Length: 375
Ligand SMILES: [Zn+2]
Ligand SMILES: [Zn+2]
Image (tube, rainbow, N blue to C red; front, side):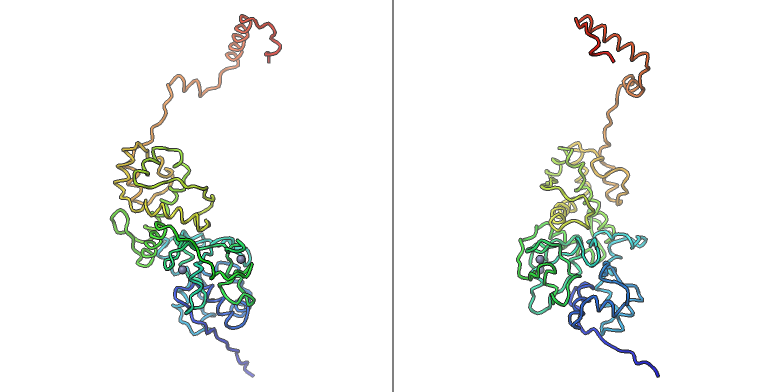
C-alpha cells in the first residue's frame, strides 16, 4: 500500500523587510510549536538555529522549505543576507569568511554574544506582529530611520545580549527578552547621532542601487563599501593619537578624531551599537571630504602619508592616488660614524680598556675601595 505523505504548511506571511530567522520563529509560534521542532521537521538533524541561518540556505534546504509554505522562492531569498552579498563584496570573495559589514553573531549553541540589534519602538507597531528587520543585521545601522533613536543590542532591564533565536513558546513573541521576559517594545531609547544616521541612510541607498558616489565620482557599491571600510580602519588606528598635526588637520574640517572611550579591539562587525555609532558618525564626515582637499590640508599641516594606513595595506584606487600625493615620511638619518658604532658590538679588548680607564678615573677621584665596583 502506498504511504500517504503527511502534509503541513507554514501560513505565516513574511513581513516587509523581515529577516529569515524572524519569519521562521514566528512561523513556529503560529503553528504552536517550538522553533527547534519546526527546524527539525523541515531539515531533520540539521541544527539551523545554532548557526547564522540568515546568511542563506542551500538550494536543497530551500526546496524542502518551499514544499511546506505558500511563499515563492524569490520572496524567501529576499529575507536572507546572501541576497545582499553581491552589493557588498567582490564576486571572488570567499563567502565562508566573515562578510564585511554584516554583523557577526558570535554564536554558541543558540546563544549569540553580539550582532542582534533592534528598535524597541518598531516592535510595538499595532498593525504588524513584532518581527526582526534584515537591515538591523547591517553594520552601518546604529539607529532607527523611523524613530530616529538608537538601536539596542542588550536588554535594557537585565543587560543580557538580545538572543531572539532563543525565543520559544513560553515567550510567545519576538518582543520578549528571552532572559528576563521583559517586553522590549515598552522601552524608549535616546536619539541616535545625526551623522551616524546620515551615513546609514546613504549606505542603504548604495546597497539598494548597487551604485555609490565618492570624491564626486560614480563607483560600484562594492568599491564604495570598501572605501568606507578603509576609512573606518583609519579612524580606529592608534597612530592617529600620536600626531597632534593630524588631529589639528582634521579639526580644521570640524572633525574630532578623538574617541572618548576605548573601542573594543575586535572587528567592526563585532562591535556594540554605541561603538559603531561613534565610528560611523566620524566616518560620515570624512566620506564627504574631496580627496584633493585632504591632500591640500595634509601638506599644510605637514602630515605625512604614513599616518594614512600601513604601507602594506592594499587600498582602493582613489585612496591610493590620494596617499601618493601626500608627503613622504621623513627618516631620521644617523651620522655615518655613529651608525657604525651603534651597529657593531665592541670588542672584548676595548671594553676592558674602557673599564680600566674608568677605574683609574675613580682612583684619581679618591675612591680607594675598588671591591665595591669591580666586576
Ligand atoms: Zn523604530
Ligand atoms: Zn532581559
